[in-house]
Image 1: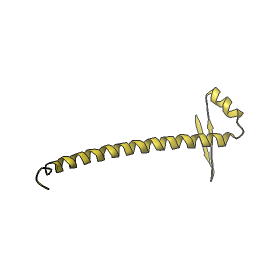
Image 2: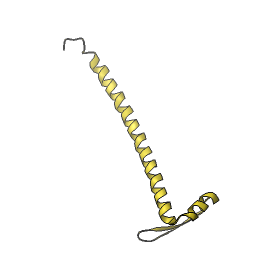
Image 3: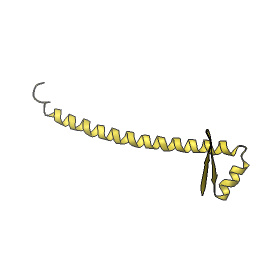
Image 4: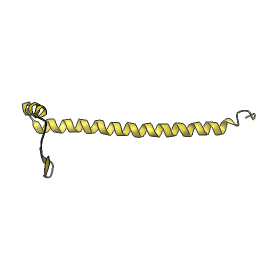
Length: 81
């Protein structure tokens, strides 16, 4: 369960975590900072993975286009140009 309350610069959440994670979190000095940093790292990994997937699709599309252009021009290779 997640409950969210918002202020101007921060949001307060009430979350339920597995016991092992809760124990590790409880042992940390600054719970909010640890959670914020962990989420920022996770979101950055997700953003990077999404960007890599987008780039991979774009490179694949560009390679197909380049191959087609090369095939189109391949017919002129033997005409003396």
